[in-house]
Image (spheres, helix red, strand yellow):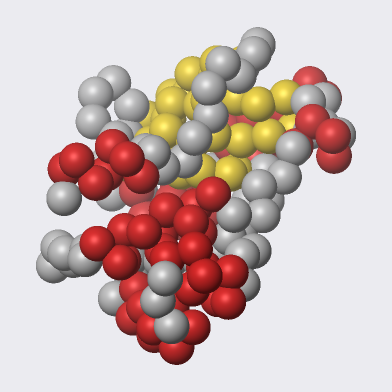
Length: 159
């Protein structure tokens, strides 16, 4: 993978967007002291290079009725990884899916409205996928910290 090197202006614009991705190009230009066209071109270039993947809204899942969050480790039989991954990627309860090392082959994070929905997912869906050999489910009691990306300041130190 090609490593993209950020300029000082790139870092400043990304920092502003991470704080509030809804800021207008005009507001970013004013804050950075560069032309609006420069902001536009920089953001477009960062998107084209894949540095900025998307702009999104972070929802509070509990306010939408999804009170149950789980981590599930999955052992997959040899030769079944692609099939298992595909079925999990298509399931709307699965929020994140990782191929991992260690005791399990896959680790997923999923959200459910209640334990009945979780039970249906594990018994009627997950355990019926051909190739799933073993699962281990951990229920999240409290989210102490949640951040999908390291802080930008941490990233800058490493770039």
